Length: 396
Image 1 (tube, one colour):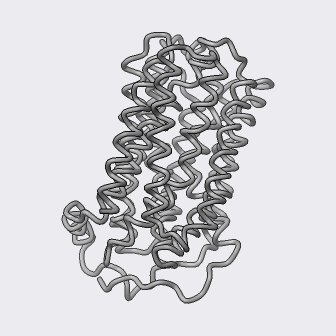
Image 2: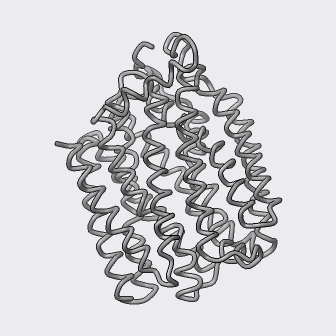
């Protein structure tokens, strides 16, 4: 396959809006039902640790699914696989809504994740198709500012649905959203021309993975992103129980706490949009990694000592989650800039590392669950340190 060159014409507003929604699938499909986790556990008669697996198993399917969709898109283009993936997401969401036991939800969440992973992996590949490195980082930051609306309003909307209906209604809402996205993707222009696609049998597209897993320019920024997401999703998995059960907040109050963290992400995204072209994506990634290490250390101290109670935990979580705006776009752009061919499979590698690490973080918090926020602090501080080491090595 010939190398992918940057698009000479800017993408339309409609295309960018659709890409933002696709990139937000991970947040949309997780954040919307976070306030319902305790009530789901009670309704399905499941212990805390089991329901937290709903997050970690979703991330497993999300990471693994990208490894399948990436080479398929390199061979057949981006739009068709995205359409199929979103339809699978709709099927998984309906399965969750109809589930009657906790393990049913866990299995259907994997199906849901396999479908949603197509949108995220291939939307990133489309940005790589259309733009060069620092410009891609700027566009990614802009898209993240738009898609940040999902975690901003997701828990709030989920909490309001929960106030008037059962937790199943949240998953039916995701079904409706998926159907709307299918209609939007159906008219999306193809970003990978036929002459730039992999040739021959589909299995040949998977051979690009051999090159990607030997490419340090790809792997080091992706590892920095993976370590950060280990802490981020560890916090997401444990936060509902920490705030609602340990500190006694209502689901609606927790939704506001969660939404407040998104303002930090919006702020750092705005900073990144203004500075990345001047300072470069590698330097901005390192700044974000330093922030993640420092805020991760604060997170650990707060959870270990109980300093300032719920307020201290809110502050530490706010700072750590805000670093997303400096880390994700620059890590993704930096990783994909080191790839000459197979952008779809390269994006899948980044996504698999990103969300596979998130799965590990959520599983660690679930496995160490002891009724306190301490497991969240342990995972967060380790992830911040790992992120900083990888970002430093990537710049070197």
